[in-house]
Length: 146
Image 1 (cartoon, helix red, strand yellow):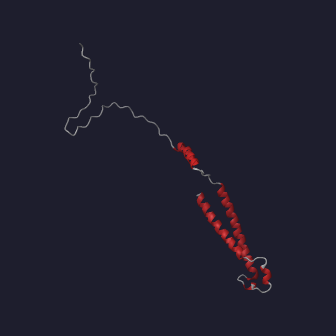
Image 2: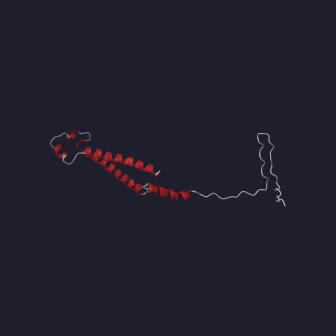
Image 3: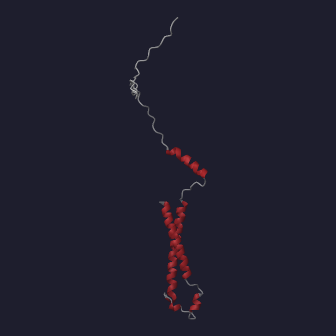
C-alpha cells in the first residue's frame, strides 16, 4: 500500500511542477509594465491590464503550496522505507536468516507397537502356492555328532 501511495503522490508532484513552470512562463515580468504605458495593447488582453497578474499569481501561489505539501509527503514516505539489500551476498544472508524462523519443526510421533503376524506373500503368477511364514521360530539345528 505504501508503494502505491508513494507513486500517486509522485505523479501529482510532477504534474504540479509542470503546471507551475507553465504559469510562471505565462506571467509578465516587471519590465512589461513600462511598455504598456506607451500603448502596446495591454488593455486588449483577456483579463484586462491588471486582472491577468492577479489570477495567474493566485493560481501560481496555490500550485506552489500544493507542490510544497507533496514534497513534504514524499520526504515523509521516503524516510520510512525498508532498506533493501544492495548486493546478492546481502540478499543471500537475509534469506538464510529468515529461513530458520519461517520453518516450524513438526512434532515427532512414534507409531504404536503392533503384535500382528507378518503379512502373507501374494501367490505367484505361475500357480505356485502361497507361502506363509510360521509365527513360531524354527528349531535350532544341532551339529551332527561323531
